[in-house]
Image 1: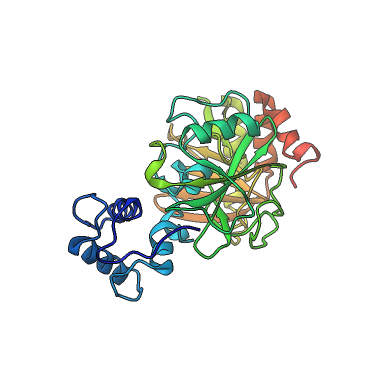
Image 2 (image 1 turned 90 degrees about the vertical axis):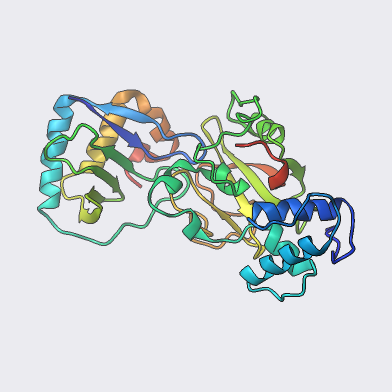
Length: 214
Length: 120
């Protein structure tokens, strides 16, 4: 885990990444220049205020997590209408409400032909996801974990790891939830009751600022 | 006129749709009318990965059917004008629609989902 503590005066790629992430959260840090100046500090304070964090203008572990890791917030997805119906497990895993029922690889021009780990996984990599170990506690940088499983020859499904450290998912048009098919919390998707999605393919890191527009 | 139904079974891929032929729509109307005259019940527990129900969208405005109908685990849910009501599926609507899905060529998929022995 290599998210440095950032404060006024910090410089570099991590600051640039912070600035890009703040924009995704609707906070203006000024120019994306990799320099943690007064406007970036003000943006961090504004973000901390909105999330109920300690307001110190310093980006430590808690602020990084709030900026980079998705929160299990089913109300964002479970509207019973267009959001719920038009965003699938891949949208949810990427934390992107594109309303396209996103298919791995399609946005980057590499749609899968066969529904297996190799092809669907390749599509996801093409979209900008990065292979990762499921045993790592977190992804590096401003990224979160996702896991791919397959109903062999039939369908794919994704889980994501939330800020809490637990996993959640959104099966198709159904509601987002943090339990498996047996109603148990998902501490490890490898051990979850996944119904017919019996093939566990592996874990990935989703870096929201670096993936294709799914 | 035939209407389309949706077999809700996938997570990543779009769910398959299948036509319910006109004569089957007539029977569906009969079954649904029996159901909504029967016992209301609680919202069914939502399905997860695998088969999680069927949906009929009455886009043709067929008399006798709600704007939208879903059925899962023996509960028929009708949605009309923003109102949702749940009924015990006393007329076999779920089995009937599953038969229609099989007739439309989705039997192999239903078998793969473990519905070869009927509704789980």
